[in-house]
Image (cartoon, rainbow, N blue to C red):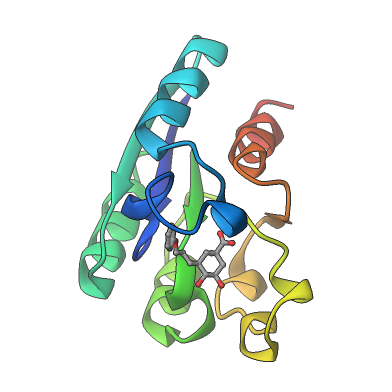
Length: 138
Ligand code: CA2
């Protein structure tokens, strides 16, 4: 089973800024824990701050992987291009968010990804990623 986690803009700052919203763990540290926990899964991780690079990675993994865990971060609420890419690929995508976007500003209540996603997991902190991986295994 091959699963890739794709993270969007500013998520490279996890654990380094705004710990009150996003926690104090870096994604690299959390990713090591996921690899340890899901040893039977071939787990990959990609992060970019660039919309086109995220679309490129979705197109690539979208025909070679069994699952995609996608946190498109702020692009979730703005990017028709990422939404179209999720629609165009074969690999199922689970949309995740660390925070509960529905308890935040109105603009975060809109997602261009959800209509094409297999499911959405949000508000569980970094555990949202763990739950998304589990959803592919069951
Ligand atoms: O809750 C999430 O996972 C979000 O996708 C995070 C995005 C936000 O725009 C979405 O509405 C919800 C923001 C990611 C920014 O990450 C940072 C991490 C540490 C410090 C600053 C930003």
